[in-house]
Length: 602
Ligand code: ADP
Image 1: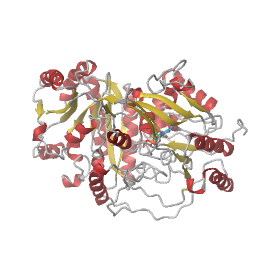
Image 2: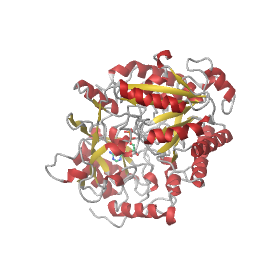
Image 3: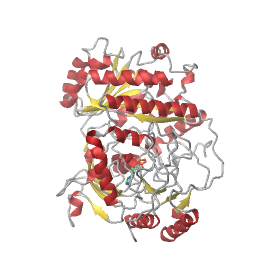
Image 4: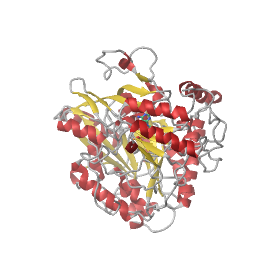
């Protein structure tokens, strides 16, 4: 497959590419395979058996599941691990591993077609105490992709056979989707129905699922960019097999499940995001009204430390909604990396690319030299946009050397136009190009949350820069400004075929997490390998929050079968047995086995 130009289409496969992005996908694929030196594995392997279950019993259990779901819907993972690329991603392992390929790997993958199938799988897992790990699309790249945290878990690939858009309501601006609906698919469907009055919100890449992205609290770039805040209503299979509907969904005959998220009583949705407390089989999402016009803008700033003044200017404008979307403030080197060429096209030395080379190159580009670029979008009819854009212009230009880049001067393939589409809710595929910066390019993110303040931005910037220099890694910081906080997103791009580079990435991340926590910054999301460490930084009052999570885990999942270790939450059977991956734990993902479960009888 790798050498061919073919890319699955959305019309052929739930995870495919829409026809209008096909050429872009083919080009992206060609660039990725040009820099790939890692040979595609042909190594025959035995399936990894999860801890606590004997090999013979495991296969007997899988046979039983095949009887329930059909042979073709239970696949044993005994084939070579093929990484593929974004549009042809594996569902058996992390295609961008920081640890050895065989660490975060599934024993088998199963394909339910309905909520009832998911219930059956859950009951089966309880019977045999086999860990299961749900994915919707499995494209959570940079955070573990489709991989389970516990080696040998059975991955439940919900997306393949549960990919229906169950409802689009053009009057209420809402929809109800199954786990396999990608941002591409929802966008295409809304277009095909001719609903010009509704927009979706999309992350940087549109191939992820709405359910998976929202549950992991991913973001997009329209005013509806906080996906979790914009969802309304879940259907969830609990780890013991019961099904619940949250919010208004609990009221039989309701017609407000997708329009009022809270219902009555405790708001339970929260415990199903970034957790291992349930498997979501349906989710409601609100859609944005077409604002009647939009206009992207970009400002360039000359110096690294302009960042401090810029943040002070951004804060009141963002809270006051003059700046209306999650804007990105991206550092110079990313303007080069996003063109998709390897860094050796610019610099062939070891260690971080010297800043003089970055700026020397930028001087030759249409945008010209800069330290930071601000990408933003103004919404509404022209006279309304003008009111806001004039204020922004006046404020941003208080920074010496700040200049507005005229979009009319930018070629059609300039990255600016990709940001333009995304901030207008049109899913794209350009963002992944910077992965080609190094051969076998993979990425993993460090994403601390801070207030929108100059001092915080500079502190995080300097800390990240210092540690990237220490580990010889190019520093790719981008600040994404929410309403009252910002996430710094630092993507470490590394060669997954080079164990030294993987280790440098891991060590750098662990040190950044530790140093950030000392200053009061915590990550909003993280890779499977780093979850224990990140969860460990949220330890106020003698780890009170984790103790609460563990109590809930044990009550909801007495046999500890659902995604053990996800978000650092280990069920009782695994606890105290060395499963945590931390700075000092070494890089083996398996602890000392599991305790036999005494609790549930089926
Ligand atoms: P994407 O759809 O963006 O590719 P993934 O399917 O990789 O996202 O899932 C992202 C994260 O959310 C993973 O940690 C996964 O375990 C969790 N997740 C995804 N879908 C579900 C679901 N339907 N129920 C519970 N957890 C889920």
